[in-house]
Amino acid sequence: MSSTATCMRGAWLAAALSLTFALGAHAADAPAAGRPAALSAADSDPRQLGWMQGFPPRPDRVIGQPDSDFFSFPKMRWTVCHFRELLPTRQVSRGLGAPRGMQYARDAGIDRVRFVPTGQSTPMTWRESLDANYTDGVLIIHRGRIVYEHYSGCLAADGKHGAMSVTKSVTGLLAEILVAEGKLNDTARVSSIIPELASSAFGDATVRQVMDMTTALDYSEDYADPKADVWQYAAAASPLPKPAGYTGPVGYFQYLQTVRKSGVHGEAFGYKTVNSDALGWIIARTSGMSVSDLASKRLWRPLGMEQDAYYTVDSLGTPFAGGGLSAGLRDLGRLGQLVLDEGRLGNSRLFPAQAIRSIKAGGDKQAFAKAGYRALPGGSYRGMWWVFHNRHGAFAARGVHGQTIYIDPTARMVIVRFASHPVAGNSANDATSLPAYQAVAEYLMKARAKR
Image (cartoon, rainbow, N blue to C red):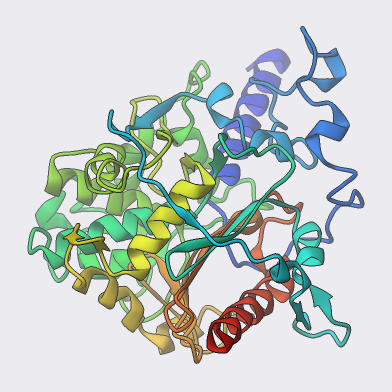
């Protein structure tokens, strides 16, 4: 292979890995790899830095393909709102009806809510935490009404933002709905639904083990290892043209067939994005619809979302079930409220309450503990949702760089946050996020009690 071809192949792999890393194939709660970049939230604001501004933009302010660094900090603070301009996507249609309105009861006192970050002694206000976590947008819903809404960085009220691994929880929700409706047997072996996976690691796993990520996979996401499986995964999943001489799998479904088993299913939790891709295939084969189309049919259309959403796709048009969703802030608020209300929308029921009760019950705590998530002691993972088992019974969808849908059943509160934190792992922002969510929940409960 010539040096030119080698360089081109290297650039292609770097771009493919950047895409995979950006959209979710990285443990959402892995220990932070290094310290955050020096630029503050204000100094790294994409409007301040001038990314993609002007007609045309200045050459040194351009972010685009096939550049491999569109998700490097601080460029990623622009990218998270513009994936569709960089990659092929598939629509999640909201339909043609009028959006379902949302009620407001804004509470200016939330900005002044104080809490002590985990492991620290100096209090911080809710408003200060927004900049500390590089927040692009945050929405708080209390008892069905919006009490707080904030936009910054690349995001505006009519914009969309990458949800990263929050996508996994949408995939998990769709699966839980099918299970609750009796359309999907979560005790069935994967090979009985997807015969193509019979000889892979997934073949003898149950659907539930895939949903709860307790599969035993010989799969590494060690980005420092040039031979790690994530590189082949990234190459297969990339929608970019494959380089000359490429002979590996093409697309998510082909790659899943190459994953091998290591250990015994059901014994330990292991956060691996390929589980979400496998579940997306199971959902598609069971329902006869892609995850994007099923999300439209079961969630976006009946909820009266105000914007279409979209998924990034592989070169065959398969939606990325593990991290490819981009959506509007208020629309994920609508979704979070539906989950809080256990599938009820006004006087209608969109799906059985058991779908949410299964998630709220949580997964195997012992299996989860083996993964070593120090910021989530006593937690578990169920249906691709993180369950905290705290005194409020909170659970959440979580994604890299600070994305979340946080649901507190006791406080009747939903928080949706989009962010572009320079460190991917949520361990970098949990200390200034989880206690902040709890403090706001307690503030809202006390404020209601005084009325």
